[in-house]
Image (cartoon, rainbow, N blue to C red; front, side, top):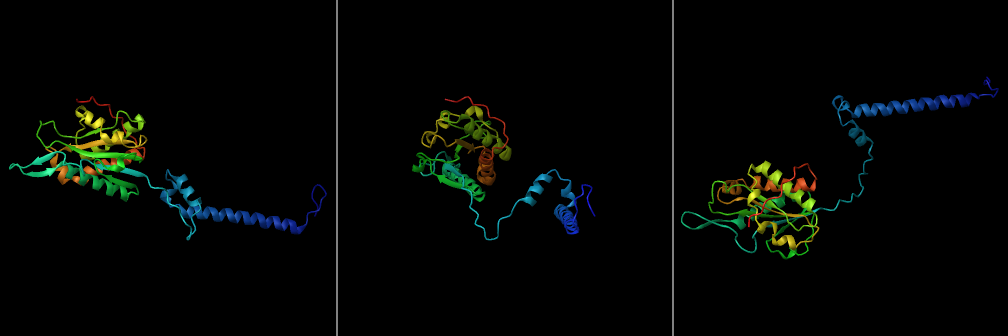
Length: 265
């Protein structure tokens, strides 16, 4: 047989092309069969179809491959007054001390640390005037405190959050504050006391001791009088509110900005 251009076509060459075409068709069929086997009927029409395809086509590590872990992010948690003084002191009807702020702060701080460590973070539990605060570097530092044991009025319930007014990165500091306010309020259902934040909070000593690139905030998780029940009997819930606020900041989660409070002298 000859082609229309007069060049002979060898039978072996034609046979080879037919074999190659068959092999290509077979390969495509096998690939399609593999993909349709990997996708169940439910996932076939799922919105994350591209994610599933990427997962299937992503090369997997060999069984004996050495995987280098990502460096852990460091977070600092200060247990307010711990290692220095008792903070606010609560007494019973007989005048005997039955609760101190330092004890409550430490219990909350320990629970926050445990939760963050379980999520893979490197967490430092720090005392009030811990020497490690000098030049301390971390992705975030949160100091945990509580308010007075004394009955003030029926409005003396809720929490406060503040960051440094002199921070190098105002936007990130405000974001940490907003995350703590939003998540803590959602989880504990306590009221945010923006109008009673004092300069003792915005000028908190640790703000000027740590590395200026460390984003930090101080939170008073409640009043030891009217909020004593949740602070001492639902401490896990309180700690979870703080933890979720920190995670909101680290994960850059959506949050509404917190208004800058009017300071109380």
